[in-house]
Amino acid sequence: MAKLGYSAIPTHPGDVLKDELESRGISQRAFAQSVGMSYSVLNEILNAHRALTTNTALLFEAALGLPADALMAIQTKYNLQAARKDKDTISWMDSIRRAVAVL
Image 1 (cartoon, one colour):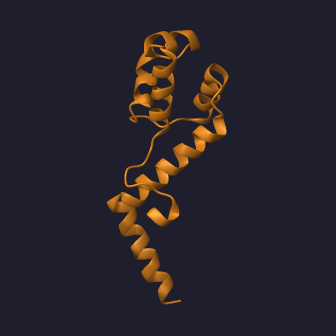
Image 2: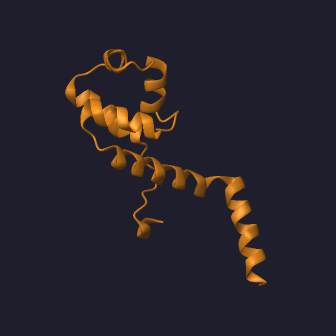
């Protein structure tokens, strides 16, 4: 997958957001409170336990100036890499490839 621009370990947008908050010296609790987001939701995003949604990407864009479309592109790439490693997805794709091969 390296030839397609994928690293061995996918980057979640939460990694980028966590680094941004840390570089600005903003605590997770203070940020969550200032934007009206629950601390637990923010923490789950920052620790890659929750996907970034379009609404939360727009929230980060408004609050931090990070482009929402760039954050969503990172999330999409992360989702694709995770799906490519999922055993059920791999099996399903193999079944489709076999079915299409006989056409």
